[in-house]
Length: 229
Image (cartoon, rainbow, N blue to C red; front, side, top):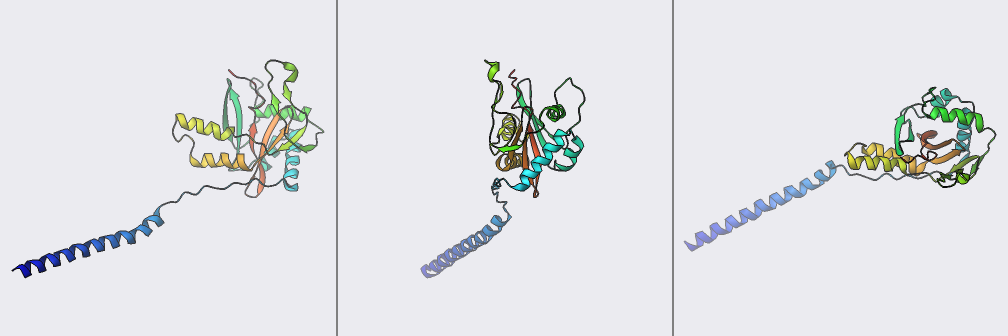
């Protein structure tokens, strides 16, 4: 009798271990499938290219169109048709932006628009040669003598601002997912790979390589706007 009970216990124990082994085997076999089906997020690596004759020529072409006040040519040849560009400006001292596919030809002089700044530049910025270097704008609230750019001219610099991504992140902290991951990646692309061009006293814009070609990707109108309230 004891023999039969021992045999039953042994057989039951073996059955439990066999079933457990099968379950573990099934789980182990499922792990690779789970990993394969799981989307692995990889951070995109961005790198700013060296200044090239291609970039210089492209900037000079843009400046030529600005001097001619040729918005049609700017929209057609220097703004990417799907990427568009960001227009950063201030409203009541608060920095914000719009995303546009073209520079709108606003003729109303009641509000200063991008088209107005391009028109002013076409009249007052002729004859500048492109130089590499950074220039700074000083609002100088306490002394008008120091108001304006540190130097006059046409300048190319890699020192771009990160204000676009900051605006997006600040907005997301108040309204979740207002700007999606694609929006943040576009901002990163601009901020990490672009070059800034300053055409004093009116224009600051970025050139970004998109699909193998340099385009206008951002106009910074906030830098020269000293309003704070």
